[in-house]
Length: 218
Ligand code: TIU
Image 1 (cartoon, rainbow, N blue to C red):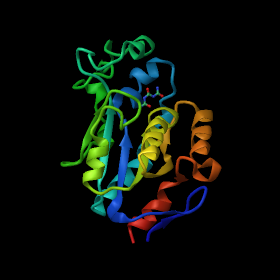
Image 2: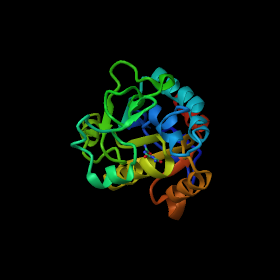
Image 3: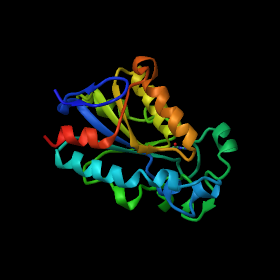
Image 4: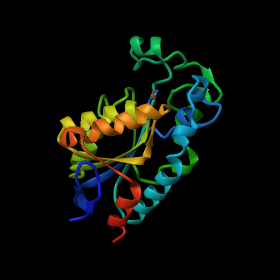
C-alpha cells in the first residue's frame, strides 16, 4: 500500500480509492488586481501554491487517478447566496476587475489558466465554503468508490478547512498538502495545518507534495 511521510503519522492509501481535490483555485482569489487583492490581501501567499500544485496535478493525471475541481460562487441572480453571506462579502455580485465577483460564468470566477481542468474532470460549483454543502460531491465520490482525499487549494483556513471537516464527518480520510494549500495570512496557514494533524490527526494528515508524488510515480 502506498504510504506518505506525513504528520502526525504516515498516511497509507489505496490508489484506486483516492481522489485529488483542488479547491477554488479561481482568478477572483488568486489574480493580482482581483477580488482577493482588492480586499487588501496579499495574493502572493496564495500564488506560491500554483507551481507545486501544477506539478502534482500533472503527476496525478499521468497516473490516471481522479481529480475533482471546485469553484466557490453564485448564480447571476444571487438566489443561492444567503443574505447573511452577501452582507459580509462586500463585493459578491458586484463588478470587479474580472467581471461580477464570484458569479458563475464570469472570467474571475473560473479556474486559473495554469490549473485548467482537463476534459472529463468534474468541476463542482459550490455556494458555500465547504465543497460538500449543497453540491453533488459526496455522490460523485461515492459512485467512484473513493474513500481518501488529497486536499489542495485555497484558502487553508476557510474553504480547505471547511471541506476537510465536512469530509471527515462523512468518513473520508484526508491528506492535506502544506505546499499546495495557501492562506492570505501566514499565521492562519500555520495554525490551520497544525489543527488538522493535532490530537493524533483529528481531521487528517499533513504532508508535502513531493512525498506523495514519489508514491504515485512508483
Ligand atoms: N475559497 C475560499 O477559501 N473562499 C474564501 O472566501 N476564502 C477567504 O479566505 N476569504
